[in-house]
Length: 243
Image (cartoon, rainbow, N blue to C red):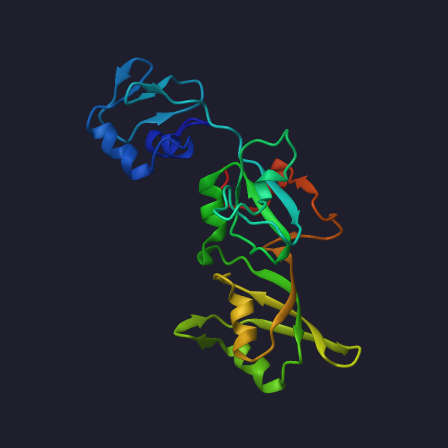
């Protein structure tokens, strides 16, 4: 294969036209042409210099994959539209940013590191447990976890029929009168409201939840509401699916 070329079905999928499987079907149906010639096999390689047409529509060259760190404030929904009219992450981003999607979500009352990308395929890849990326959170709870509760969390627990994978737990000393405690939790799955549900199971409601790391990327000292783009070199070094 020549440098800069890839299989046409993958190229079409990465351009956002349809899935790779759908692209392969369209090729076999004769709905795809390259430089004015219809192709009939997915085993065909193309690059950005080729004119690719699918169902009569020109496929636009792929944008370079980009990735940003965003320090999400509390009180924003991680969605493009909220039925209840609550403010969203995407409404608060700088006006010069391209359209992006989030890698996973943080709920309304959670804050901290949120990864944003212009590639839906990359977002899907990084969300998958098979990627093996850990999510680290600083969590303030009411009360204090017992040693037995920590052991259960580190073995994995089931809450209301949902199985949660083992979590690494590090606890701080209790604060003030002893009604609150900070703990650091490291997860491998990131299921919906996972931490809140696990803590509620032990009768320790969460009063603050901050994601401080997602895989190799750290929140660090990024100010609340700020966005920082990751250099393409770092993306390629850290994420094997980008090539």
